[in-house]
Amino acid sequence: MVDTVVAPAPAHERVARPPVAPGHAPRAPREAPLITGGKTAADVTRDVCGPIERGPRGLWWLAFTAAFSALALGVVSVAYQIEVGIGTWGLNRTVGWGFDITNFVFWVGIGHAGTLISAVLLLFRQKWRTSINRSAEAMTIFAVICAALFPLIHMGRPWLAYWVFPYPNLRGPLWVNFRSALLWDVFAIGTYFTISLVFWYVGLIPDLATVRDRAKGLRRRVFRLLSFGWTGSARTWSRYEMCCVLLAALATPLVVSVHSVVSTDFATSIVPGWHTTVFPPYFVIGAIFSGFAMVLTLMILARRAMGLEDYITHKHVGAMCKVLVFTGSVVGLAYMTELFMAWYSGNAYEQFAFANRMRGPFAWAYWIMFGCNVIVPQTLWNRRVRGSLAAVFVISILVNVGMWFERFVIIVTSLQRDFLPSSWSGYVPTLVELGALIGSFGLFFTAFLLFCRFLPMISMFEVKGVLEPSHERRRHDGGVE
Image 1 (cartoon, rainbow, N blue to C red):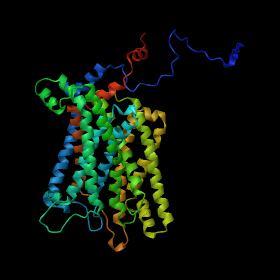
Image 2 (cartoon, rainbow, N blue to C red; image 1 turned 90 degrees about the horizontal axis):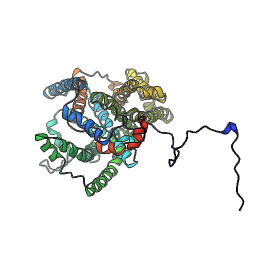
Image 3 (cartoon, rainbow, N blue to C red; image 1 turned 30 degrees about the vertical axis):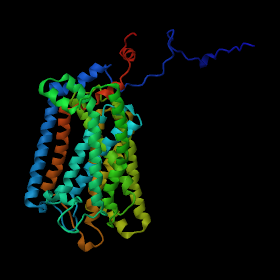
C-alpha cells in the first residue's frame, strides 16, 4: 500500500480558522436565537404568567380604555339602528350592500392568519410560530365573532336570525335555499369558528395547568376546572400531541375553503366586477395577507404592553414580514389579472366596471387600495425596513387599511354603476355605519386585551421546546462552559 501525501494549499487559498478545542467538532455559523435573553424554562413560566398574576402595565390600561370606548360607541350605533331601522344607513335601491358586508368580509379575512400559523405551520414544524401562535388563534376567534355580527345587523331584525337555519317549523314547505352562497357562508363560518375555538382551547390546556399550579384560592379552583385535570404524564402528552396534529389536519383545509365560500357570494352573481373565477384564490391570498398584517400589529403592541420583548423577537417579525411580501405580491398579481381579463374578455360591461373603479367617483378608494396593498409592502424587501419595528407597525396598519378598502371597492363600486345608467346611484356612509365600523374594532381589541390579561398569550410549553441548551446560552452570553 502506498501512502498518499497531500500537498499543502497555496498561501492565497489558506483561511485562518480559530483553534478547535480537543474533543470538539468545528461549529457552524450561529443563527440568531428565536428567544433572546438566555431564558430558562423557569424564566419562561415566570415571564408569561407575570401579567396574569401581578396585573398589566399602564400601557395596557391606556389601550383598553381606547378599545372599550370604541366598543361603547359601536354598541350605541347598533342599538340606535335596531331601534330606528336600517334606514339609518346610506344604502339605497342600487347599493344594497355597503359598510355592513364590507366589514363582514374584512373580519373573516383577518381570521385566516390564525389558522395558518396554528395549523399549517404546525404540520410543517416551523419553530418560529411558537411565540405567536396562541395570540394568532385568539385573534381568529375574535375576528370571526366580529364578522358574524354584521350579517345579523344587516338583517334589520336580528332576533329572527334563526330563520337562516334549516329546522322543523310550522311554516309548511318553506325551507332555506341550500343552493344559495349566502347559506353556504353560515355553514362554512360556523365550522371554521368551531374548529378554531376547539384548537385554541386544546392548545391552552397545558398552560392552564401551569397557571393552576401557581395560583391560590379562587383562581386556583377556576384554573383547575379549565385545565380538565391535566397531569402532564407521558401518556397525557402523547395523546395531546396526537390530538393537536389531528385538529391541525382538520383545520388546514379551512384556510382555503372558508374564504373561497365567502367569495362565491360575489362570483356566482352576474354583476360586472363580481362574476369572475379568480375570486376564490384571490380572496384566500388576500385574507392571509390582511391576517398576517393584523398579527404583526397585535404582536408589536403586545410585546411592548406586556413586556415580552425577549419572546416576540425581530426574528419572528422578520418571518412574518417575508410572508407579507409574498402574499402582497400575489395580491398585486390578482389585481393585474383582473384588469387584463376585463380587457381581454371584450365585455363592455366588465371593462366599464374596472374603468369606473379607476376613474369614477370612488377612484380615490381604488388607488388607496392599490397603494397600500401593492406598493407599500414592497418596502419590506429592504432589511433595514424589516428591522425597524416602528416601520413594520406602520406598514401593517396601512396594509389593513388597504384591505378594508379592497372589500369596499369590490362591493360598492360594482353595485353603484351596473348595467343601466338610469339605475345608477351614489353611496355615502352615515355616522351610524361609521360608528358600527369603529365599534367592531373596539370589540376586537377589547377581547384581545382581556385575553392577554387573564390567559397565557404565549404558549409556554412550545416556547420551552425551542429554547437553547444551557451550554449554548452560556456561549451566547459570553460565559465559559
